Length: 160
Image (cartoon, rainbow, N blue to C red; front, side):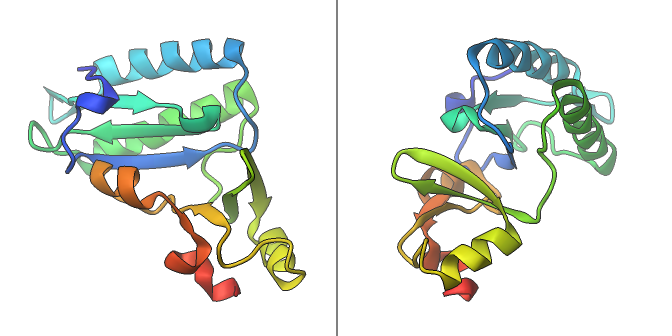
């Protein structure tokens, strides 16, 4: 069951998928349609899951799940990963690669490999105050409050 993302409770579980490229308006429309279709049929043990999505900065797919209604199971999580893999293949995106860093450079969202980010840190092209996206947050409250943080407040701090 689709629920508007902003109406999910603060303890809703979230999964964040950073994209290697920004979504143009045509792709956003296609992704909205695909996410809506997937979430409308997403279930756990035959029970409909109450979930929503959003596309922050037109470069991330964020899926939120109200686990108060029905918790995700291994099979339902596997189904969501297969869905994201399908989006990667269909739209030539990289969404599941955890060996990357997304961060802000002014108002621009940059996507770099971990190695590139380390090099940028050593060359002082980014600093401990650079705003990074901590895609490891697990619930909506953390997503809203601790997703965009200075590098020194996240796991990225090890590079400074």
